[in-house]
Length: 127
Figure (tube, rainbow, N blue to C red):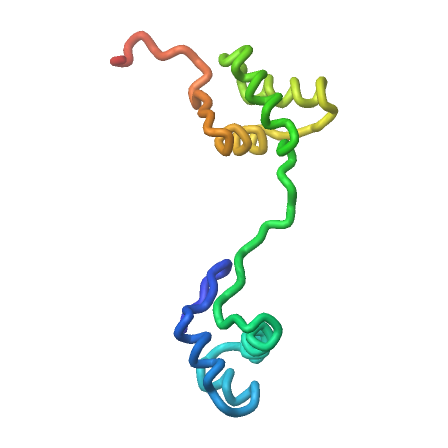
């Protein structure tokens, strides 16, 4: 059974691992999974009574999470600002150094889009 980073194994495999008899090593070999996986499935079932995979969590708080309303207000005040200008505003007003990527992702989470093109269009291009 192929596994990809960040993806849980299928529920039917978890059920078969729980129902299988034998040692950790034997069960792991039978289903072509690691012994640690078999152990985690059994311990989660014993501790929580759940046979399903747990929820994924990102325990890192958003860097600009506390500035959402202020950032929305700043963009509404001057919608033509570039990402670099918004980063500079955050640094000056709030003392946080953030990069363009962080600012772009934050604006995307807030449902705002920014222009990708900062220059005026060419006169020869059709508009």
